[in-house]
Length: 59
Image (cartoon, rainbow, N blue to C red; front, top):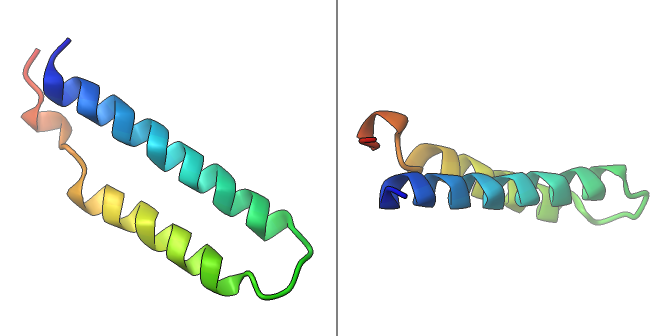
């Protein structure tokens, strides 16, 4: 498999797991989680910005 395509798939899986964790925190009734949620969403934004672009993948 193309290395860039494999990297894209791995990054997409990581992003999915981070979003799932964020959703669990949002659903949790505990206090003091706002900072953690903001940081996790920041990680997702970073991934979105610096992720391998589809146009860079040659098949």
